[in-house]
Amino acid sequence: MVIELIRCNRSAGVATIEMCHGKVNAMDLDLCLALERCFEELERDPEIEVAVLTGNRRVFSAGVDLKRLIAEPLD
Image (cartoon, rainbow, N blue to C red; front, side, top):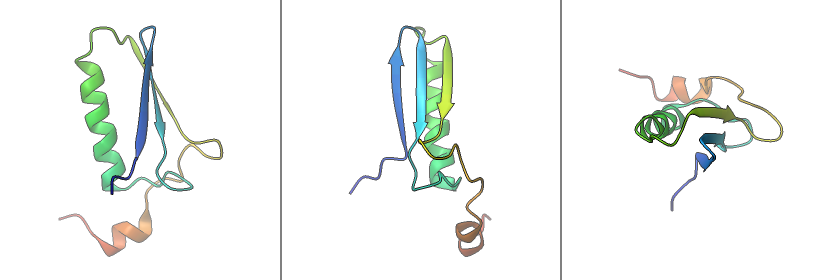
């Protein structure tokens, strides 16, 4: 099963990146890595002049996923 963390749409030199990670787009390592990969890909695309990062219809992001960070601390 593949979980979609972000959606990236490109049109007329603009990339719109929508976070779609749960109800509040809590920032965890998976979401941050997905965003990093997306921005790296967009940086190599000569057609893209600007990128817009958006949340879902309710919230941009609730911030760091503290519950997951405590459960799975970074080394």
